[in-house]
Image (cartoon, rainbow, N blue to C red; front, side):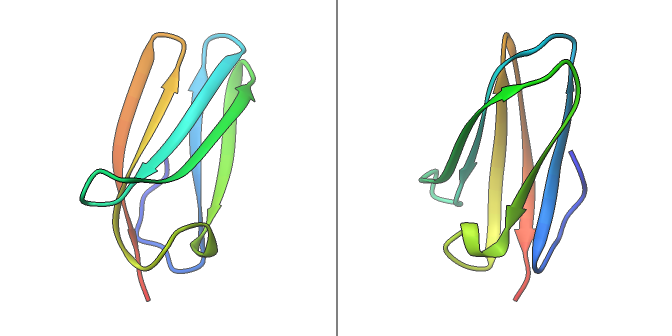
Length: 80
């Protein structure tokens, strides 16, 4: 998963050992889901672009990847 902050778009990159369904959830600081994307991820490297317009406003968010039996959560910062 790539570093932040970003002001226009960012990419969430992740690698999987096998093709499987995956879900990317983005939460605001109160824990409310503000973005949800379910996708069929491929074996190996996967990339999902997130645009500033996909989210309600600038600020701090947390994104979580759920795939197979793995979960990863990271912080992202959107600048004005």
